[in-house]
Picture 1 (tube, rainbow, N blue to C red):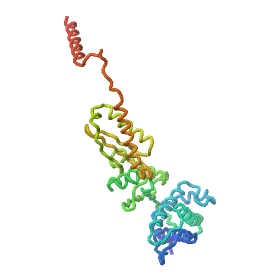
Picture 2: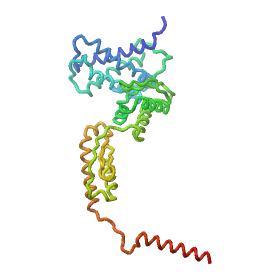
Picture 3: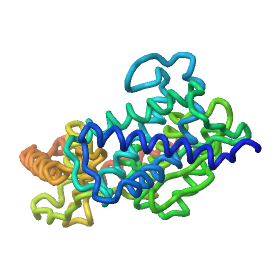
Length: 339
């Protein structure tokens, strides 16, 4: 018989990982599986692992020569990052599975022990202790979860129309030396080909982040924000310092918080204030940041109202007089040239 197919080899490895992770968590009493749901839960974990294995295995052989006895890593940054992404996906599946009655530990403990269980299987795979034959002709790929690239990328990806987001991902792949193979809009996961020898998961994630952030900075997509339009008091409408006061308030908030502040005049009677959070934590406290911006604008406008209006010195000639003098001077010079 010939060597098993690539799909069979990868499926076997994912099953070993799923079985060991689930068995470890149950043995340590971290969770309780619903009655009769063990096989279904294992299948869920396999489904979570399979699209990411091709992003993990290329790095395992590179790490094989240096890997030590550390419990949580491979002594290789790329391998550690790829496996961490896989375990994050496993953790998300466990947290939302209908096949689990209860979870008795915090998320960090659950993911830590899942990582160690998966690492045990992957180490055996690296050492050739498992009867799994990888297809030497198989081309590894990278799977990028956009939700894992930070608040700005996740929020922008959710708002960008799919054709534009796909173009951004294609540009990112080209920048990193690979190509986009598939984008799953339901899970917001992008699959890229292996690319050239210099392509890494980290460089690809950086390229994807840069492409999507550039769409935000150019105004192609707007992030969620809190905004409100306020009436500008009549006494302040005619003052030229209002715009400067608004700029000052926005700058102060941006220095104090991970937010973008917008303060602008809307016509002559109103001002628009907006706060756009740039991190998950800022998004949770965006209302407080908006209240702070309102207070800063009020203080800046009060300061502008109290400042004395600069006046033109009495000795300075009026504009009409200045123009008349310049006209007379030009006429005198012209007469002098004529003579």
